[in-house]
Image (cartoon, rainbow, N blue to C red; front, side, top):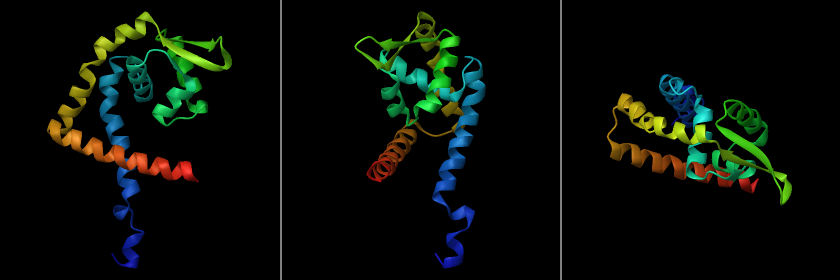
Length: 149
């Protein structure tokens, strides 16, 4: 690639990833609207459906989000009665998150979300798994670089 091509937007890997992420989130929107959730609320619930009792710090680590982003999100989900936040009695600095019965029940409705979204994309399941694996590897490499700074 010559010098003039390097700074063209269409040649930027980071822009392709950014734009793809935004477009994927848009595909999720109508499906998640039926559940009354935003994409970010949905991914918080995905973690909680895997591990019902978790600290804010652990949740932030799983989602690559800081507490400044998570706190208002968790307050909103708590207001929707999908989860509860409580101080850890063993260490008041930690906030423990637990799903409510309503949050657990919502999981049943959410099973259709991935299938409905990926049917629109038209990729074979094997392609999705392979692409997700490679993106996760890249995410881990970038995160490692960030940790070393």
